[in-house]
Image (cartoon, rainbow, N blue to C red; front, side):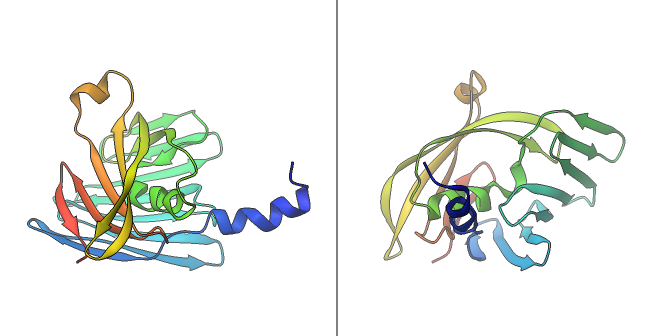
Length: 193
């Protein structure tokens, strides 16, 4: 068992956010810009369908998300240790569940896990800012592959339970440093090369 002093030294390296990335596909560009601030991490995401401004602690615990869709509708999510408050255009939803992930920034969170060598498959609950709904997810590493001449980790994400049988899968390919190199999902296919 690690002593508390060692634990403090190990945890920051494990929780480090992956590098920024830009991927292109038939429907446009998918980009993630990750920056460190004195209070944590800021993740800026842009796709053909939405833009996201997300703030998290240094260990990627969600703090706040502001999401705007292609029609200009904005949703704000404020996370706390005990849950989240979702301010949709016409209603506010309160979730009293600890440990939620933000579904709009899963590319970054899964990349951080991949950068640690994918120490084990994941099961987690995430909040979808576009609807305010909670979903259970499962993520597993499918193997190591080649991404345009660069070794990468192929990860599949799907909804857990019976929804997994009817919902689409999301596939991610990550560099060993956690950078997203390729993505395939309902929004389309994107790659960095």
